[in-house]
Amino acid sequence: MSAHQKNINIAEVVQHDIDHHFHPFTDHKAFHAAGGPRVITHADGVYIWDGKGNKILDGFSGLWCVNVGYGRKELAEVAYRQMLDLPYYNTFFKTTTVPTTELAAKISSVLPKRFQHIFFTNSGSESNDTIVRFVRHYWKLKGKPYRQHFIGRVRGYHGSTMVAANLGGMAGMHEQVGTEFPGFHHVQQPYWYDFGGDKTPEEFGLEAAAAVEKKILEVGPENVAAFIGEPIQGAAGVLIPPTTYWPEVQRICRKYGVLIISDEVICGFGRTGKWWGFQSLGFEPDIVTMAKGLSSGYQPIGAVAFADTLIKDFFALGGEFYHGMTYAGHPVAAAVALKNIEIIEDEKLVQRVAELAPYFAKALASLNDHPIVGETRSLGLLGAIELSNDKAKRGRFKESGRVGTICRDHCFKNNLIMRACWDTMVLAPPFIITKKEIDDMVNLARLALDATYADVKAEM
Ligand code: PXG
Image 1 (cartoon, rainbow, N blue to C red):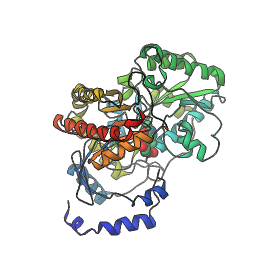
Image 2: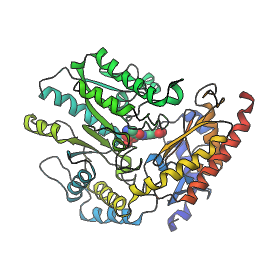
Image 3: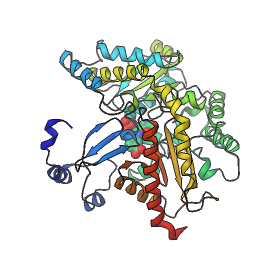
Image 4: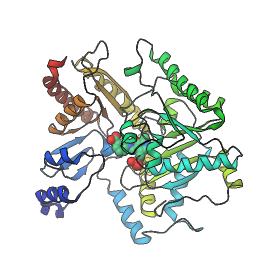
């Protein structure tokens, strides 16, 4: 804790928060009734501390983003130096800054060779907004103006701006703002646990992919611009698709000339044990969107990588692309992101995730004997625990999300951050987590599961 933090009056911060802070994704009535926020004051490694001095194991890397862990002085120093050299300059009018350009080159270097051009944004939502703008314009330039429709998945999450929310398939978000925009469609997610029935995961993977073809035919192949998917759907509950799914989706998209967009906001930069989720899941996208792990959350920054085939035509035919944000490629954010990628490279963190993956999977699997655990699954350092009232039948508790919230609250009490996606508990710890910390994390998860079981035993 830094010296100035010792003087923080936490009770006052809580009161100011209740009085003035309008939080995202929050039911404020319930939140205030429960006493307002838990103030997070500082962090180090895989731990965060709250205003009461509790040391909490962050099994969720902030919000799926602090991949290199907390307390990285070199990232702070790079930001400080860059602010002194050049705190801001734009990249609009035939200018650039050093870190912005160096970051574009660095991102290209960790992608397959066909991705040589990077567009900068400030978030995952903006990255996904950008692809809609780009792709629709691209198809017009290519003389196919009808290719305007996008296909995503139910419970896909692509962000919270209006267009990104439409690409996503979160029903609650759509219902709140009225009908969805025209031109956005959603197909079944490849979620074997809930929808696979008696099929093998491989059979089910093909069935879920067939839903993409069905939708393309329904919309009319000549009208479909692109298919967007997270290699592993994160906010839906770490849905790791069967191995058959993505290769088949790719075959279908190629058959109809539909572009493939890989949303790597969560899966990118090593989370799955390879640099990119598409490499772990076996497909080759045309466009890649990223944010979160790009800077490990140390600065807000997002980006989009475009395959050369698209860029070649776009630049040749394009004229001006009427799109861009003031802070796109912000030099301080770019300098931090650049250093973050260098840390991932220097410390071989992608390899580390791959090496830790079997240990993490085994630790999670040790929970399979628990009375309310229906399944555990993981890839790299992305893991999920399904809560079930009937293990043998992959049963679900009544009122989806209720028991997940109970479990999450028990985690909080035990000083573990584990997120609930409905009744799926998810973990995405920083890549620097040790085996001992993985054991601690899973032991804390078991305590929360025990406490949850005690609460819901009567319903089993
Ligand atoms: N794509 C994916 C796959 C995401 O997970 C976004 C895009 C949007 O990124 P920005 O930077 O605009 O938030 C995300 C963000 C949650 C949660 O509760 C997940 C996200 C955001 C907020 C909450 O799991 N993911």
